[in-house]
Image (cartoon, rainbow, N blue to C red; front, top):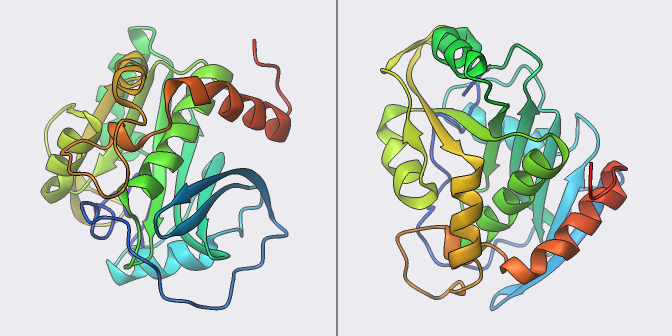
Length: 253
């Protein structure tokens, strides 16, 4: 929701059917992928999932605009980095992240809260542009995207605190599935004319969940947390190598 005006922001809406098990997606013509770069394949019981880095502002725009428009919101400001999940060649889900350079999308409604975080020395990263086809995402799709986003924010940007704006009716999803905490009171998002709450997560807390739970369940399991569907801890070096190759930074940056 962070910086959107009426027409799109699935920060306002939790991903479609987030608790469903992985289900086959409707077959459609594949999205062109000349504006994205392969990161990793992940095999599932329904088929092979591919995670790609979307390297152009237009990449994934059709999906994001359609899904946000279905909720009455409109996209404006792009993310700094966007990851996309493809199934059978079709883009089915995206998540974007923004590096804090003094102003984030959430500053529009929560400038006081974010200002206090900055004065405490927190290095912020904003999650945004979460969009998904109605027949996606599964837990594996969301977990795969979030894992890459966590690693990029922490290892490349040195972020130690994640923030996201969500519609209040979806705060329970982010609390239960991703351990985000409510940070501040509910208020009207002036850009979209809808209620919003600011939520945050310490990156180290998220990484500890990943270390303990990552890769412990497959897509057919039952769990009230998303972390067991992330990659295993011993798979992270491969993920980091791919991020370093694509975004051109050293693993010690």
